[in-house]
Image (cartoon, rainbow, N blue to C red):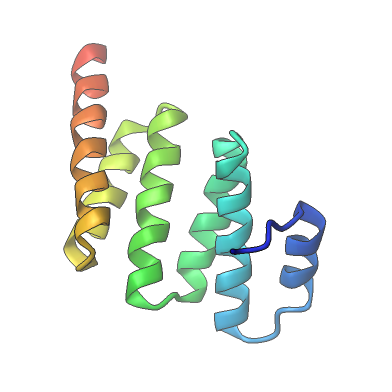
Length: 115
């Protein structure tokens, strides 16, 4: 079972990260933490920073998916669609693809409802 982390522990992980990979993973974990606690707007910059530092393809696809979901929930449908399309291009994970397909339909419905 994976141990639940506190925000303080995750922030320390980021503070002590020295390599690009460590910084990417620390930012990704902070994004997940805030996202999973209903703070999507706070998660977005962490996901973006993680992506800038470089993640392996599997984690990059997940980060893009969660970023897309957070963008959708905060009302940024165009950026959400861009992120989810990029995630769809690089993922080989069937479960993640299913999630992205469902998210794409929600983003499209929200976008069409506003136009």
